[in-house]
Length: 104
Image (cartoon, rainbow, N blue to C red; front, side):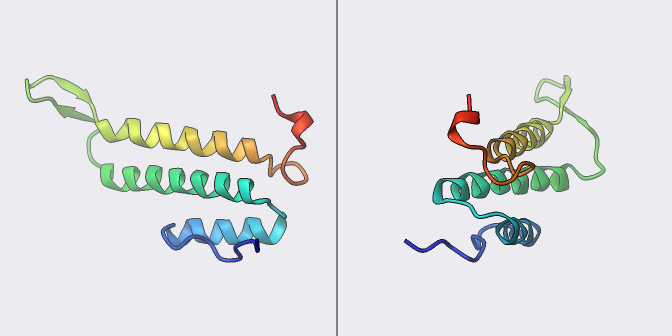
């Protein structure tokens, strides 16, 4: 099976550039490419939530008139955390993905 050389088309332009830059620097196996794709999807989702929130208020009124945290803040937070977790799993700050013995 040949490795994909192009980023997945459903990713944002910024995520596709990051995908391409990572593939220029690292040799990844198929399961690493899947993790990279999922990480970049999470980054795109976090960025989309940030755009949707915009410069608006960080709180909203519930249907009962109570002040609550904007629900998209949780979407942004969770997806940024997921991006960080998946990127750490890839171990790209090291020289390529960590060997199996280095994983927990």
